[in-house]
Image 1 (cartoon, rainbow, N blue to C red):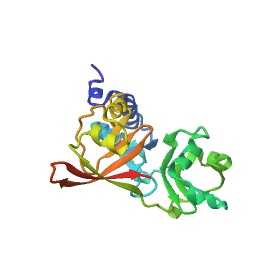
Image 2 (image 1 turned 180 degrees about the vertical axis):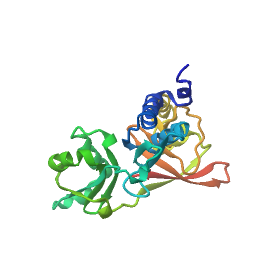
Image 3 (image 1 turned 135 degrees about the vertical axis):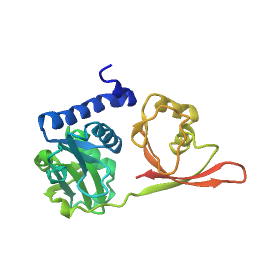
Length: 261
């Protein structure tokens, strides 16, 4: 089988892995520089693992506009070039308003407004919600489109400005903290408690492939979670296992969960 290595990836990751291999092959064999769209951490992991197969012909770096970015663009070049010297094509979209209701807007409101313009999520990096607006990392090639067309977020009329990355303001990730007492660290049990679903209802989206653990599709409800794991469930948002605090007198595990706001 020519692409037997693809079997190492989950079925819903294979199309992306195949595409990533093509980017690397083109850089190594045809000397093509490739700047990808924004990738999530799992996609970055896939690109990096495949890049190891082409390490003698290509070079690679990731750039999300600032050091701690979660979503980043991959810059793939022939091995005689330095990927760090290539322009990753990232700018900051600053969103503001004189309407005081802008202080009530959340991450989902900004994301909804962006996707409502018909823009793919892949063209958008991290979104930083601020007290008086938002700074959003975006692909430079669509910056003008955003600047012209984004005029409303939720019900708030907004203004936009394209600013350089050195003016980016990074917001602190905020969690709603939950303290749970669970029988085990099984994925389905913790999803059930965090999302306030019955165990049976929590099983449905997990087994349907609508759950991700550390950005990787996870369909095994019995998977054991650990501190640091990030879980997302389609339609219910995402949460992080902040700390496994130990076992109480009844033999149950105390877990601290942070739900992303």
